[in-house]
Length: 561
Image 1 (cartoon, rainbow, N blue to C red):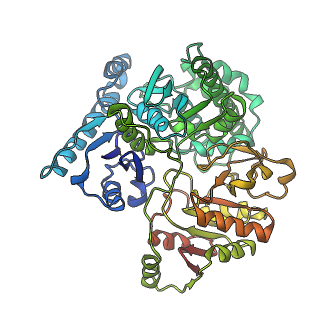
Image 2: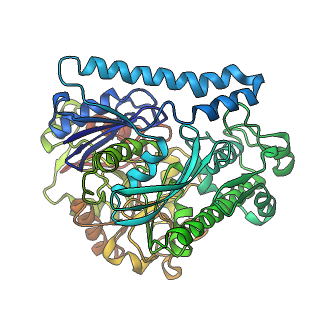
Image 3: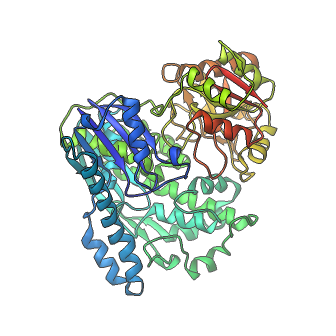
């Protein structure tokens, strides 16, 4: 049975293929259009998914869409009449937009399958695509379920319980009560782009002192005993259906908003710190409710808020759950996967598949294809049979490298498929990469990738984190050893690397460990600020020559500037 999953309603359009329950390929449209967080219909992703899976449209049995156009329509209409001054704007945003997207999908479905069988389309609610889909591909037979984002059709969060192929939702929270939207507002306040730059706010928070504003923030956001969010909306101007705008009271309380490209003032950092702490506290309060209600040992977290790896780290340490699962594409890009799994398990009642623990689900290029591109670009290059050893030597010599190997990873975190890598023991690497390579804010930290066998020797962690979504602390006696990946608060967003999942990446880090004594490397995404992660050898070459990188390691080839 072949299921095509599609995310098109919201940002980060994507597609995936499930074959008899196995996730064989998943792709984000931005990687092909080169427009970050692209919202267009994912024609290119669908085409490439079929190519990778060696299938045609004739093979598709079901199509899963990660939104339900008519869901909560009565709540949307009520919101329109509650804010008559912006009725037309909200009508276009919350009603008409859904109609046009539904029409686009229907036309695509009719045109694509006009000469063959028409597979049924399943419209899966957004938060079911987030959380139920994540549960079905998690390693847990039974788990508590928590989904949080800005908003789906109209819901902003979901609390539930999963066992086997059965999922029960016992609480749904609706807009404007949205922890994701609150964090978007703070992101806007800090001068970043809301809905997309929340990771920058998370990284900025340790630079501030939460104590200056935390009491005020705790008055603004609270949790009811049943899990509902209680928000004081006097601080937010939300009558256009978004939280990007702040009320006068917010500015009076927290200070002047930072404009993009202005320097940070201390109060911006303090506000980021306070709202980050409150997000973590809200997450823990919801987990307490879930733990008491479900008695489950494990937790599945999904939605855009679940990309807040600092919150996830606190949940692992403090919630009472043994561990949590967050899929690598936990935001809207992963809802194509979630919708497909929901159809496979919840609708068609198929058995649970093997857990989705492999993020390398994208395109792949052979040495022959890579060499063709290098020759076409008239580049000098060297072939190395033991590319892992050669890479380790270059890292140990202090060089910054592009690492392009195997299948591309899904999600916003580079996990060793399309990465920029460096020696984490050299303190200057952080500033050098931010300034000369990534061209981004100087405060932003870099993540470590370490082989899972020895991760606990360097980091305060008791669980694996193959997707780099659970922040932990660097052990105090290792902070001076790993200065380039240790944030100002002593934390790190660790990726534990498994030899079975990515053998070449694991071997390369192990070889570096033999030379340096530390089997950990600095890892960041292979792109520059504002661009998606590279997909093809052409993208790799272009990015390499437009940055201050020293070598491109691509397949078994090394290119030097």
